[in-house]
Image (tube, rainbow, N blue to C red; front, side, top):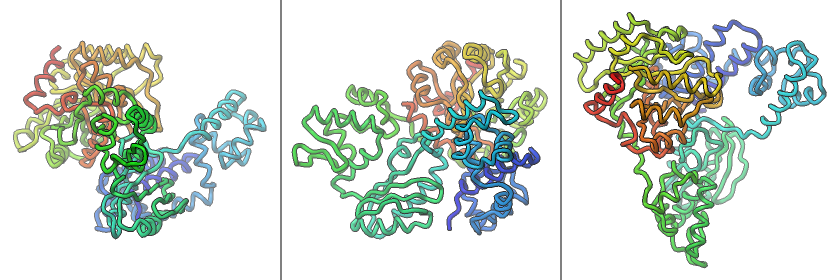
Length: 576
């Protein structure tokens, strides 16, 4: 039985939910939530660590109790602490927390007074008008719940890209090892590097497709076989992720790959172009009448309709076909183009490794430089730095730079942007930094004009270098704050500063459309990991995927520059 990090995270999240509904100690709840986040972001397999006998308490936020629970989940697939909570409260009740407007206290009230423990029971109670009678609710709340339930029913379940990768990549490797399989590739929204994926599409070529299907449905993580034929099967994994596998002939592999990569709107345009050329495009190839004229490779499909090959990340019908026809497709950034990382934390604030460890890990990740950007004093929950502590760290960086080979540490800070647009630390200390990353960490609900002006004023501060995670969104958790992105991008251009693409899988912020806007306006984007431990640099690959979706080239990204070219750009922002 394989247990993925995401499986462990799901157990800890459910424990946290149930404890919160029960009214448990907030610190205990937070410990489980932090552990869940650590498991989701962990760059190595916790199951492999357990198998090797590694000390799990070395992981950030994992003490003896949580380490024991991780080992228990890995070895048995269960957690006694969660089973105990299920005896006290039904497991279905945590689904209620996904309904907007229902926090733990309200969920508990609904359960205690109306015996509501499922979404279906909640809908019946709302329809019967029973909810508004409860203390702390009222007619408006009841109506909001009705509307939220309607949206919840139509909302398709999607999984964050980095979580889906924990299931998709091992499954792809498993299929590749099945007898007779020649090629296998992940298609669909996963291949297009979408921020979230609804299901997984796999494509393979093989000598005996029926045997591949038999091997596929016997995969240990398959919960249900929804369909199985000689060349196609659909299964539901225990994680709740649906997977479709198709085995195709080599002659139509490229056509099938193009078709099942999508997007739907992109493929509609390709079929329309084919019709203009007197052709028909399907998953089986490109046909002129009954004769197949292309389809063994994706390149042949695009060539048949008069286009060069289009990178999967661009296939959203957002202008890529017009650009391809005009010969103006960008040469997208590649992972190896990054020279450094400009947003990294250590245990001086809320990181989990030392300055030396983070620097050495950056070097091991193939980077030439790394900017240490701790939180500033306003973010007390992260033990943010005041001027004295920041200066002490800068002195430590100078000392370490004199010792280390093959990596240069830049002195920086992730400084809070206050509500009035001022920065959290005085300019005289910020001016001593190599890089100043400004970030909004509070007052997310300000009106559009006020939130925009707040950021514009911050960018006007003489030491401001980069706007961190510019929209503040957390995927599936927090909506972007309301800002005029065009104004911010143009102000960055006028001011000579930059925007961050935060590569953490929970953020992926800039949005792809804003990356494209920055490119069009000539504003450089910094792809940064926001690493809080040595494993965090692995997130850069997700930033690259998002950058490619945003049409960014090597030239559009700030930290593809070697250090000798980067320093003058940063110095210009610090002194302007």
